[in-house]
Length: 175
Image (cartoon, rainbow, N blue to C red):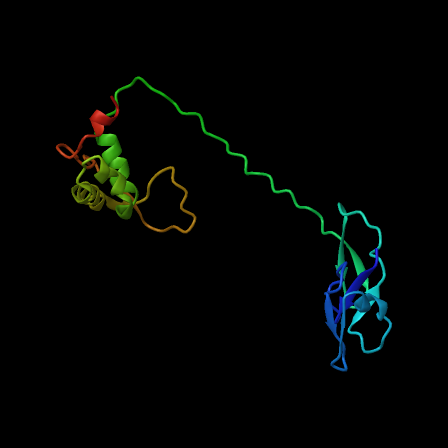
C-alpha cells in the first residue's frame, strides 16, 4: 500500500482532495495522484512500513524514513506482602491502670488515644511525671551503661503513678 507524507509528517494512506503546490497552483481529485512526481507537489510517496512484531517492537516515522525500535521491558510490580501478626485473645480482665499508664508514660504528645476513651491525658501525664521526678540519681543494676552516665533509680518505698478516678471508659471497652 502506497502512503504519502508532506512536510516530513507521519505518512497517511490518502492525500487530500485539493493539494496546493509550492508555486501556488492546486491539483484536485485524480490530478493529485497523477502529478506526484511534479517537483512543486508538496506530497511525496513513501515506502511501505517494514514488517515488525508489535509485541516486542514499535514503529515510528523519522520524517524521512520508518524506524523500528525495541520496546522497553515490562516491569511487573508485585503488590507488597502483608504479614498480619496473630491477635492474642485473653480472658483475663484488663486493669484500667495499665492502659492509662502505658499511654501517658510513652509520649506526652501521643495521648490522643487515651482521650478517645475519656481519660484526662494531662492528669495522667502529670502523675507519671511526678512519679519519675521522685526517682534518685544512681546506677541501675542490670542496665548497660557504657558511657557511665548517671541513671535514675527507684528509691526505697517508691510508688508508681496513681491513676485512680482517671480511667474514662477503658474498662467498658474490654467487655
